[in-house]
Length: 171
Picture 1 (cartoon, rainbow, N blue to C red):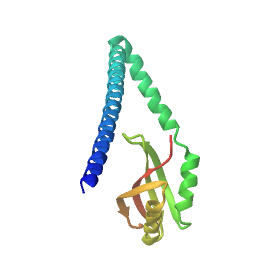
Picture 2: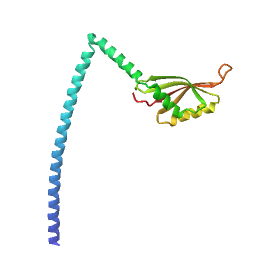
Picture 3: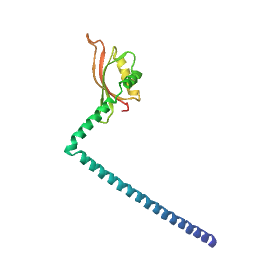
Picture 4: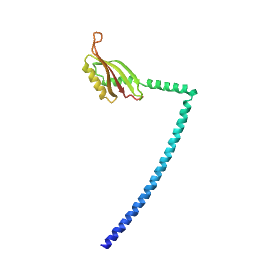
């Protein structure tokens, strides 16, 4: 029993030595990680300071006109990036044969997503509902927001629905 206790004690001392060496290695590794994090933080502060300096330079009155013009031109380029061919081709995939697109107006929202503002028409309201469901199920379009719905009149024999939908066209 004494020999077994001595063997277990030696085993525990050996395990303690291994645990101490692992703790030291972990501490060294943690020190290296903290050093890298502090270096990255210093780089972030340096880049943020440079960005602030550049922003201050652009905001000077002499440069404000150039910045405003640049923002305007960039917004025009984004709007021109909307492809009518792709919109109509993608719309053709979900549009039933008996539903007509009477009007379509693409715009960019604040998140630079293409928003399609449309007026669609059909002889039966059920056909329009099927089209709206097909839009929502398509991965190219988001949820549909219906603004107005008009019944047929003598001058316009179609049910007319004014809807908006997010379109997933990449600009």
